[in-house]
Image (cartoon, rainbow, N blue to C red; front, side, top):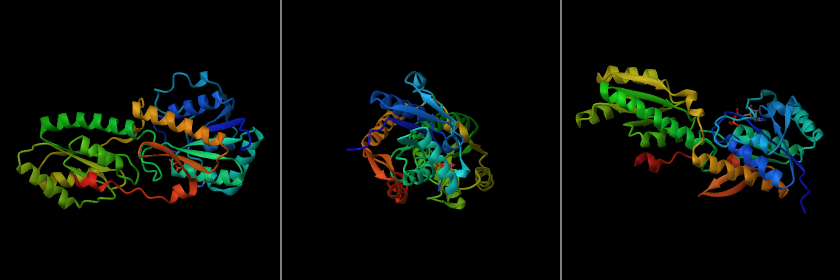
Length: 317
Ligand code: ADP
């Protein structure tokens, strides 16, 4: 039988994402309902090193399911790349009596969780990033909200593009993955989607726009994934080669904010609940994932080796 889990910790790490609060809430409330105590670790792994740790009650997570950001703050903790600091963090965790830790973040955060698990602190990763670039899961917390934010912004740009017969080149987030670009490009009726995976040459983009203009269209949206290239340069080239007034917009961190959508709230709640159940069952070194709508879990190292290509059927459509 698994060792009784009395106290668990929860932290958010890496880039923030709407819905992280809903996941924290689910972890806290599930654990408390199972008779566990919960400690909130502030600013990701940094809080474990600097012992910035708070006791969390059920009411501490009241009124946060609908709030973007993360009440535990998040940070990138460079010390964690060094074994000596990870050992210090492990000892701090043991000193405060942690029997397990839920880490809400991306692949980098999963690596940190893998090391802590190896040292003897059972860790469970929960996928939190707007980019949906975690290969082990078809869905990450924050993805839906971020895409809806993009769609709302691009719809507004589209209005003014139409009035002025312009081309808008819009850079969206996604790090090295084009999932946000692909889906929002479809949803906004973009004439072109450019990502690292589909690095369409500028001359092809120009030819495409010219062809579409000949069919009567007078305003154009081009979605470019961050990491591909400079959207200002792309807009300049389109303008020079087509004569269409073209502007670049970088949506930036606005995509990280906002109240999480229903989908993000529900998935974050399911994943937080599932993570605590795994710890209760004595599991360690696992990540929570969604596959075909169902919750599953994988070994962290196995999860990190997985690949998630862009959906080319969606692109070709
Ligand atoms: P994400 O979790 O969103 O992928 P990062 O890659 O920035 O974001 O990772 C978040 C944090 O996780 C880092 O600041 C660091 O504290 C920890 N981390 C990332 N990669 C490693 C690694 N290889 N070894 C140990 N800790 C890591």
